[in-house]
Amino acid sequence: MKAIINAKTYDFNNYKEKVYILFDRLIKKIGPMSEFNTIEKELLDKVIDASGALVMPGLINGHTHIYSSLSRGMNLPFNPKSFTEILEQLWWKLDGVLVKDDCYISAIVYGLESIKCGVTTLIDHHASGGDILGTLEKLQDGICRDLGMRGIFCFETSDRFDVEKCLDENINFSKIKNNECSSLFGMHASMTLSNETLDKISKRKGKLPIHIHLAESMEDEVDSINKYKKTIVERLEEYKLLTKNSLLAHCVHINEYEAKLLKAHNVYVALNPTSNMNNAVGLPDYNLLKTHGIPCIIGNDGLGANITREFLNLTYSMKNKYSDPGNFNFSDLLELINNSYEYVSNHLGIKIGKIEEGYVSDLIIVPYNSPTCISDENIFAHIFFGVFDRFTPRDVICNGKLLMENNAPILPFEDIYEKSVLASKKIWNILK
Ligand SMILES: [Zn+2]
Image (cartoon, rainbow, N blue to C red):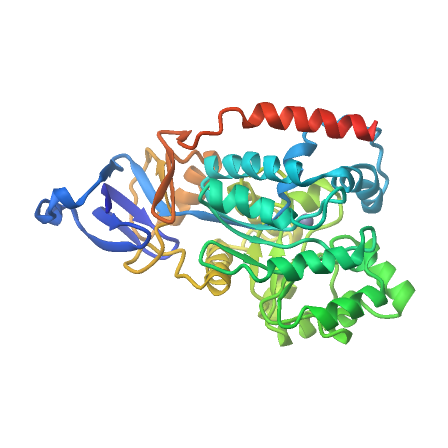
């Protein structure tokens, strides 16, 4: 049993001051510091003093690409004029040659970077053309077994790859399901999936929810309408692929009818505003999704590891998109953050995201000196403008284990960045 003492806690619902938390894998007890002296200290194998810091739940990255860590600074001819050209000139070149070792190395690097950003759960959308079979297990080895984080993985089935192997990898990996690791059925995007492939997926995936890029750019919708005379959501519905709890990334260009269909299927949408801006594909119509009651979560699409930047950018970009400073207020952002905990709770069969007894001990301790008074009424303004703006957790705990202490990851992976540099050299040489 461990303890955090002198804590100010905030879990996107409640704010408490001067409390202690007793925890192992689960939070066992929370009480006022005045009662801490009654605890039998010999029961504790560690006491962490959170004076001058906020204790919050570990964060969730709701849509990412772990292998993107190997893309940084990749020097290939790059002059895209469209979203498809970004894929062709960068991402499809990189993911096309990745093998299992690259997947493991990128998992450790991306996991460490995520831990430094206070992220303890990753929902990953993976692709690797050099090896397909066995790659999700490599991600699980890196993220869950070796780093001690939680992960929900899938392989993005695409006509670019051997489709049968993509199907096998998703189905094989779906047998792994525990409180730390689970899976979705991965699909790249409508524009790289023929009807024949959708039919095969539909016949094999059973009730597995899908994880797909949906209408990220208008090119995806135009492709669907030109080739199949229907929108993407109608295509997916025709093949009965919109299983409950599916995760649809982006949905920037869906129309009103597609939103209605999505609501009827109890799916979630993962918004990735910074990636959308970087790719110049437009921004999601959050008001459309909200009007139709479609639950959204927030990812970063592999653009770095920091998820709080997405929290900020989503807020700012939605105000700007609708030319309304009152649009997308704190209650919207809080709802999306809490949706991500609900989504992961459903998938991993745990209670995550609150600092309450019985919830998993995924906790981050974030130093914060407030220039003004904090109360339970203004705490989220402090979090948004003060904490998220320069988000530097000091300690990170997942599943009751310390993953980072005093700003340094405690796991022995000193040489992983060296290995990652060597892997990137090998990959970039192949692509020259
Ligand atoms: Zn993505």
